[in-house]
Amino acid sequence: INASVTDMARWLLFQINDGRTPQGRPLLTKSTLNLLRQPQIHIPVPERNLFYGMGWFIDKPDAAGPAIIWHGGNTFGYTSNLSFIPEK
Image 1 (cartoon, rainbow, N blue to C red):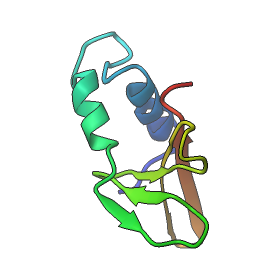
Image 2: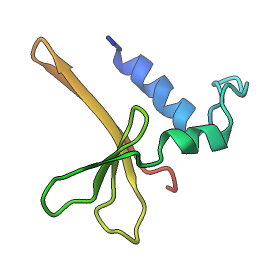
Image 3: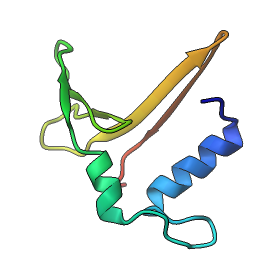
């Protein structure tokens, strides 16, 4: 996927606005978004609680604290990362 900064900002807004478009139209329910962010696979990284959901990495630095949801990529020398904490 090739995305601009504007595309990524829109994707982040969609995520933090509970699956709604900038116009407020719902495309996904909040419960569906939450399912995508549920840990499916544990990724064995020393001293980290790292998992993979459906398209998202789920990082739990503190087992009792909020999860950091993220995904990144790189191509042709360019790198990007989109991270957020849904509860915040």
